Length: 129
Image (tube, rainbow, N blue to C red; front, side, top):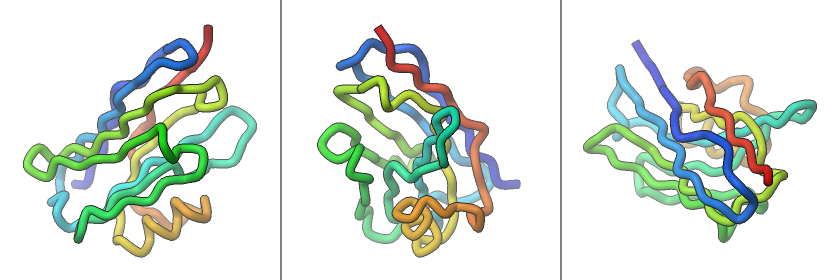
């Protein structure tokens, strides 16, 4: 049974930081690529970052470059999204998802993630003063 559980969201002031965690179970993290997505009210879901299972290479959306870092700990089956210098426009529900390398990389780059099979329940991030 595949399961992904996100945590770490919350309310933070602009300029602050959060670390999101995606704990995966039911499958070996070594064999799955993980992506982070977000969806703000009234907006389309968009890819934020992803990290390959094979070589650890990562991709970031332009909005995340220089501020967010994705990292994986295969021993603990956790993927993190470190978010710094947060802005009000980062406010959204953040989801992690798992699938093949090609599926995840394509979905995070295009935002078209309907084919992704495994999703977490999401964690709310609110950036506000």
